[in-house]
Length: 457
Image (cartoon, rainbow, N blue to C red; front, side, top):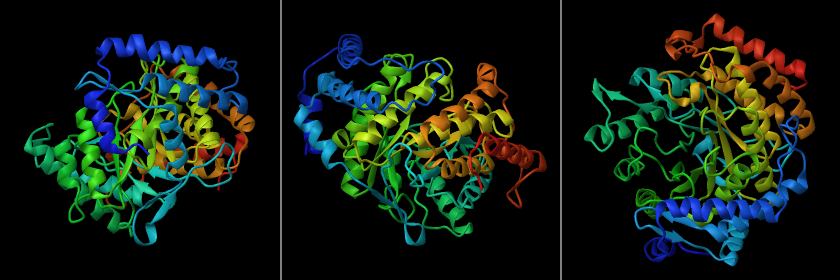
C-alpha cells in the first residue's frame, strides 16, 4: 500500500501543472476519454434509478482509468499526485471492509452494502447546519440522539458563543470547536446514548488548528469517532487537507474522506458525475488512508441533490462502487425545501430511496440546501431513517417507480422551494416534541409512502 508519507512526498515532487491546465487539459479530457472508451451513455429520462448492472460495472472501470490517468492535484505546490494502476488496484483490494465507530452499547460497524441489499443501512443523523445559539444546538442534538435508528451523529455549526461571532482563524473558532463537542456529548448523554460516535469531524471549525484543538478524548473527538477530511473540487487536496490527515492518522482516528462531483461543472452530466463519484470513493483509502467515505454531489446551479439528473448520477456511481468494492461509505443529499414543509419529505424520500437500493448507507437529507440558520429538526431526520430501513431489500425497478411518483410532486418546485420554519418555530424546546402541524406533515408523508408500496412501520 502507498503510505500517507509517500502521498505527501508526491505532493511535493510530482509533475508541475498549472491549476487551469489540470482542470481543462487533464481532468476533463481524461474523463471524456474514459467515458468514450467504455461506451457509457445515460439511461432514458424515465429511468431515474437504473438497474443496469453492466452499466454500473463499466462506470467502475472508467473510474479506475480516470484516476490512473488524472491523479490528484495539490494547489499549494501546483503538482499532481499520481498513482500506478497496481497501486490503485491494491488500495481497492485492501480497503477497510468495515469501520467500527462509537463506544459501549452504541458501538457498531459501518459496513459496505450492495444494490438491493436487505442489510439495514447505516444511518448517520444530523448535519453541519448553522445554529443561532448553544441552546438550539443542544436541543437539536438531543432530539437526534433520541431517534432509535441513529448510528452516528453530526454536530451543528455554532455561529456565535455568548454573543461573540465565530470567525475562521480567530480564537473564537477554537473556543466554539471545543464547546460544540462538549455540548454534543452532553446532549447525547441526556438522551441516554453517550457512546454515539460523532463522525462529521466538526462543522464549526474546518481549519487544521481547529482539528488539533478537538483531537483529544477529554473534551474532543475520540478515537472511536470519525474525522471528515474534505476534498477540494474536483480532485484536489491542499496542504490544509493533508495537514489534518497527518494529525488524525497519528492520533489513530478513523479518517473519512468527503468528496462528491459537482453536477454541471468539470464532471459534466449524469455519466461524468457518476464516474467522478465512483472515482472519489475508490481513491479514499489511497490518498488519505480513509476507513469510510462521505459522498455528496450537488447541482452547480440549483445547489441541491434531489433533482432528477442528480438522483440518477448518484445512483449509478453508488451502484458502480457497491458492486465492485467492499468499502463502507454513505451518501448525503441536500433538499431544496426547508423544514416543516411537505416538499422536504418528498425530496427526502426520493434521495434516500435512490441511495439505499443502490447499495449506499445514508446521511439524513439536509433541508433548505443546508444553508439556512436553525432550519432543520429531528422529525424529518427520523423520517429519513425510517425510509432507509424500509427501503432495504427493495428492487431498483420498484424504487424507480416510487421515485418517479415523488418527482411528479416536487420537481416543478425545485427552483422556487418553500423555505419552511426554524426548529424553534415548529418544535417544543422543553419537551423536544414537534408541534401538531409538523407531526401531521410527517404522518401524511409516511402514509403517502405506504400508498406507493414502501413497507414503513
